[in-house]
Structures are given as C-alpha cells and as structure tokens.
Length: 601
Image (cartoon, rainbow, N blue to C red; front, top):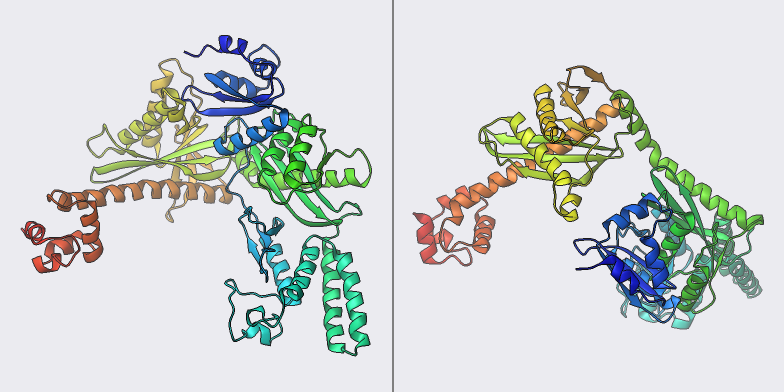
C-alpha cells in the first residue's frame, strides 16, 4: 500500500517531473520541479492553498516521479506528459479548436499555396492562424489573383496547359514553361507578403516597374503597378501599431467569475497577420503567471510558428527555462518580454482588452439567460446546471427515459444519458420518472469510483420535468429518498407546460403556480424539451427495432450478425425476408440451402 508520508521522505532533491494519481490510477496532475523533494512536499503541508489545489490534493492517492539531469529536460518531459494524458488539474488547451492556416510546401519544385487546418511537421511553411476563416480565404484569393502560381492540387507533368495558363493565372510549370528558379521568385514574394514584409516587396516592384518601362514593356509595368497598389492596400489593412518588432506574439489574459480567456496576436513586420483565443474554466483562483506558464508550454509544443519574441504582462517564474526550451526548438534566440511602458505595453494592453471583449461577448447571452432564469425561478444562486427527463414507451413496452443537460445556459448534447426502465412493469410514467431520477442521483451520491461519478458529474441546481404536477411530485419523491437519509439536496423542480404548437409556454412549480417566461426563454426551454424528447424516443425506437430483428432472425441457428446484416441490406426489412422464397434467400452471400430451408419454415 502506498504511504504518502513515507514516500515523501524518499524524494530526492534533484530536478524532475512528478505525476499525481487518484484511486483509479488516473493521472490528475503533472508538474516539474527544480527540487522534487521541496516541490512535491509543499502540496501536503499546511500552507495557504487555493481551492483548486485543495481539491486536487484531496484526490491524490499516490504519486510517482522521474528524475532528469536539468530543468530544461524536466520542462520538455512535463509538456509531453500533459499533452499525452491531459490531466484534469493542469491548464489544458482543447484539441477540438482549429483555425485555418495558409500553407506553402517550400520543398516542392513548384509549391502550391493552400488553406489547411492541420499543422504538420513536414518542412512546409505555415502562416496564421486566421481567427476568421473568411480572412484566410480572402488572402488566398488575393494571392491567386495577383500571382501566377499553380492552382491544381495534384501536380503532374503534361503536354497541355490548363485554362489558368491561357487566362494568365498560372505560369504552366506542368508543361515546363517556367523553371523552378523563376517560379520560386514569386513564391519568395508571397512568403514576404504573408510575413508582413510588404516594404521589401514594394521596393522590389518599383525596381521591376522601372526596368519594364525602360524596355517599353508597358503591359508588364502596368501589371506590376496593379500588384504594388493591391499590396499597399493589404499592408494598410494589416497595420495596427508603430511597434518596430518583426516577429512577435502578444499574449493577453482576462478573467471573469466563470472563465479565463487568453488572446494571442500574431505580429510580423509591424503588422497584425492573425489572432486567436482560448477559453479555460475553473482557473479563476490560479495566479495569472501560473495560467500563462501552462498555456505557453502547451501552445508552443509542436508549433511550427514560434516567434522570436513573446510579449505578455506577467514576468513568469520559469522565464529562463522556457526561453531556453523555445530557442532550442526554433534554432535561434527566443525572448519572453514583459514591457512596462510605451508602445509595446499598449500592444499587450490591446491583447488584454480584446480578451476581455471576446470573453464578455461569449458570456453575455449565457449570463442574461442565467440571470433571467434565476429571477423567474426565484433562486438564491444561478441555475448553472439544469437537467430534464422524458419517458418514452408504447403501451408499456420498451420503456425508456432520456436525460439532457443545460450547462451555463447551453444545451450540452454530449452530456445526454439514456435509461432502460428496470423496476416499473406497467405503463406508469410518474413511477418511471421516480426510478430514473433516483438512479441518476445515485450516480453522484453513491458511486464507488470517481469514474462512475464523472459519467453524470455534479448534481443539478434545477430539474425540469417534461410534464405537469404528477411528474414534479415523482421527482420530488426521488429527491426526498436521499434527504430522509440526512443529505441536504438543494435541487429545485419545475414542470414544463406546452401550448398548442408544442412550445413551452410556461413553467409550473410544485404548488401548480404558472411562471411566465419571455419569448427568448420560451424558445430555449422548448429546444431543451425537444432535445430530451428526441433522446428518449430515438432510444425507444432503437430498442424496438433491435427486438423485432432479434425475434425474427437471431433465433435461427446459423444466422449471426454478419448474415443478419447482409439479409437486411438485401431485402430491406424483416417482413420482406419472411416473404422471400428459398431461391431468393440463397442469393444473399453466406445463406446456404440449409439456412434458406430453416428461414422458409
């Protein structure tokens, strides 16, 4: 058995990475330390800890550690372990958020310029990200219009040029009309454009225009002039500051009561070429420097667009080791700067202000809904988690229930759950509701493992019953079972009353009092009610179809899943299979004469 106090005594005073695990052996936190002995022991001593750390420590069942030679090695190992295991108490970037980049495969003799959302370590150049996909498409359209690059996805040599060559949109490398060296000149110019080096391009275009004019090639000179004017317009749109840095990322952070937002500006050659933002929940009690440190470690791991300078408000405790790590990856010096005055500070402030606006805009609609719900339901706290249930059956057969969750004013379909009714044998919707809610409460109150509890999460603040007073009473009965055992469950229960158009026209409480709601709230709750209804009825339909299929086919010896699917695919339904002749059945792969005989009887 793992004895934490005994294991703490064995910790070495060397650099390394420590891994905290819970009773189910899940990794809940990964950290690095200059001295494992000092750092890991600090978690278990009576010091001023944040609520988040207190909660984490309460879940630690055992820990392990890996000793390394220096702090740089510890940082790299820490980043990789966090990326692989995604521990719940580390600052985590979500994997499902991707922004478009513009990609140029510079290793090719005749590179193409495309939009992609996948960052690969393939030697190509990536530019972005573009927070607005429309901006990436606009830039790509501009490049295709002003530069004669190939636009075919699958490049191969041919004897005939495509239409783009004839309308002067391509130099036709496919038929050898341009050498790789000549083609690369315009690719180099496109790279300069995407990196914000427009002054360099404009100077070069002025020289080329002068040369074309001297040769009396006025058509060429006019083409170059048009390209120059277009690039100047793009340059003006991108310019956001007089800051003189060439290659920097600017990071701003803003906290609300619910979330944290981090905004990243990408500045290349004094011009903003893109930005993106990330949201994090339940980090408000963490220090800004701790959040930013965790963010930077994950954000720049495997990122092909590491800048030469990163500007942010906070001076990070791990500044030196992070700089060393990033410099090693990039192959040249990377600095973390925290400006105190001047234009650079104003740029950091701009990133912070944008993070604030981004977060406030995101939370505005949700907070208005939550505040309205709190008011109409006369609650002391915000109803951040609401659950609703629906029963589905036909004449008491295949009785099931659906559960849906609304978290912070947003319906979370991924948190929906389905139940088979186990204890009610006749059609009695209130009794079914009581059973389902009792089982749901048990998951959070009685589950032996954290993994089982995770399936349903925290108890709801409110339960909406899909029905009237009988459903409300059934849910209250389920709640009372636990309150009678001494547990205080602060869960409000309301019914959803529909109008003739199947919309939720009002809510009712357990005293049958109708609660008027706004049109906006009515639309949301109607959608909530429809979602749980769809969850329940789709599960009911699935079980009914499975039962029909089973009763007709699975009882025949020799008919397994593969043959069953083949028969259903061939005939379309069980009824058609029953009507088929022996010869027709034998047309299906795997159906022998013997099986066909059995099915025909």
